[in-house]
Structures are given as C-alpha cells and as structure tokens.
Image (spheres, rainbow, N blue to C red):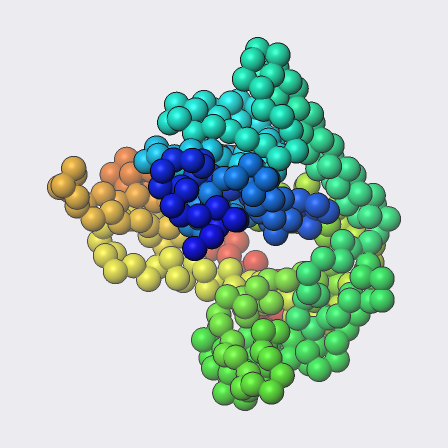
Length: 413
C-alpha cells in the first residue's frame, strides 16, 4: 500500500522519515485567506510528499483554538504526548505562528520537540537553529503579536465609532420580538413575537410564576427562536423567560459595549460590563414594546422572588442571614448560603455566605467573595439583639415602611 508514493516496506527499513502535521486556526480568524485548516494541511502534505516523508492519518493534527495559551490546547497536547512517545520523527506545519504567536511559547514547544528527537520543519519559513535563526524567529513572533494587537485595536475602534454614531453592531440574531432593519443598525418590531412579549410581561405582572409561564407557552406550542419550521415547537425554558423579563430593550433602551469577552482555558466567556462602561444608544434605536410602569413592576417582582428563593434553605438552623440579609462588599449583590460536605481532608461541614456574581461583573473585581458563617453570624446576632431592645427605633422603622408602601401603586405592593 502506498502513502504519498512511499511503500510501507521502504518505511520499515528506515529509508523515510515519519512525519506529523499540525494545523491551527484561531477562533477569531478562521476565515483568514490562505490559512484555513484545509489549505494548511494540504500544503503540509505537499511538502511531505516532496521530501518523501510518511504521514499517517492519525498524525494529522487539526485544531481550532486561540493562540494565547498553548498548554491548554487539547490537540497540541496530544501531539506533544505522541512526540514524547517518539511516534514520529518530524513535525511539519504551515507557519511558525501556527505553533504560537507568543515567542516564548513558540521556543518552549520547539525545544520540547527537539528534546524528543523530533525535527521541526516549516512550509513557508526556513528553520535555522543558529543564534541568528533563533533571533529571526523571535522577531517574526514579535511581529505576529503586534499584528494581532493591531487587529484587535482596529476592531475595537470600529465598534466604538459605530456605537458613537448610534448604531448597533448588527451581529447575531435580534432579540425575541424584534428583527434587524435593512442595514442591521437598529431593531424593528416583529409583530407576532411582540404580542408574545406583551403576554409574557402581563402574565408575570399578575400571579403567574416563571414555571407556569413556561408551561403555558409550551402547551400552546408558541415557537421559540430555536424552533424549526415543519417541526414541533421546542419547549420554553425558565432562563429564556427570565432573560426576556429583564431585558430593557422592551422599554426602548439599547446599550453598546454591554459585554466583555474574557478568554480563559481556551474558551471565551462573555461577562456583563458595569453600567458606567456601557454606551446608551439614541432613543428609537430599539422601539419599545412594553410600557415603563409594567417593566418596573416586573423588576420589583423578580427582585422579591430572588429574596424569597434565598429563604428556601434545606438547613435553616445552620445560618442566621439565610434570608438575603447579607450583601457582597465588592458588588453589592445578595449573598447565598453554600454548604460544603465533609471530605477526607476536612471531616466537618463548612458553611459559607457566597457571592454568586463572580461570572457577571469585571471591573469590580468581584470573584465569588465568601465568608464563613461562624465568623459573621455572631456579630449580626449581637447587632440585632441590641436593636430589638430599642422600641422607639422599631416604631420609627415600621412607620418608614408604611410610608414607602403607600407610595407604591396597588399592583406593585
């Protein structure tokens, strides 16, 4: 059987090198002309055929991964393990920045391969392990890093200019209830979905819970955005309905720079920016579907329900501040109870108040702040005990609450 014109017998007597191929595209540059996975692999195969290298399918490594963290690339890790097992003699790749754009990371990978007697061969650039050659590779890596930063900076400038002109980015689908205008700079109302939005808000404003809402919409086979034509509509889930009820688009408010992309462990997470970093877009960019009063009533109900959910504790005697009375000092969010089971390292149950907003904010540096119940509860109980003895203070507080309640509309009470 031939492999690129080279027989297995030739390979067995050691006449030819065994080669592996590594091709990579970054998630944000997959369509870059001339460096797609298919074109990289094909050019590497042509190179191997020209040099009479054996390449097995098992040693063609294709990866879609950002170039910032080489240690966490699963395909590259598999390749390095194969190199340590000496499963091939040469690694062929299209360009050095496919290994990494970071010159230090690039040098570490090459050094590891050479330590395992694997030669490094590049299709488009000559590999020279002399001091001058190492310097040239470092210079090329530096240029790649600079170019990457330039691309990111140009993209950011473009986004900011678009926001400052009062235009939306136009990426992805429009929010449920809307469709993009012709140039994808603003939303237009989608009449059928808009009626569903109005119904969701009005039902929840009444006595309908999120679970009941999801059941009603599912039972009536109202299509979701992911439902496909000709197939039974998919069911509605609580998170989708909750997201709709919190979305200020439905009262005509639109913001740019709401989310920040954070690359971690080879994946990208999108975290909501603090409100002072977002850009309010001009009135009319998103037409309102819901009136402000209805929206405010719904937000108040959602807040009350979150407070009630904090009280649903399976072990109410474990902690004093389980009712949503303790707040994170970093972001101001209510903290919830986290109960850690005994382990072989710690035979005792550990109970903490924990902020769950670590994945939602960025500039406040809130990263799931927590405090042991045994540390804070005694101080809280001491504070409450002292105030319970002050009858005048209690009377004044009750009067304040009464005044605040009388200011609310009947529907919001």
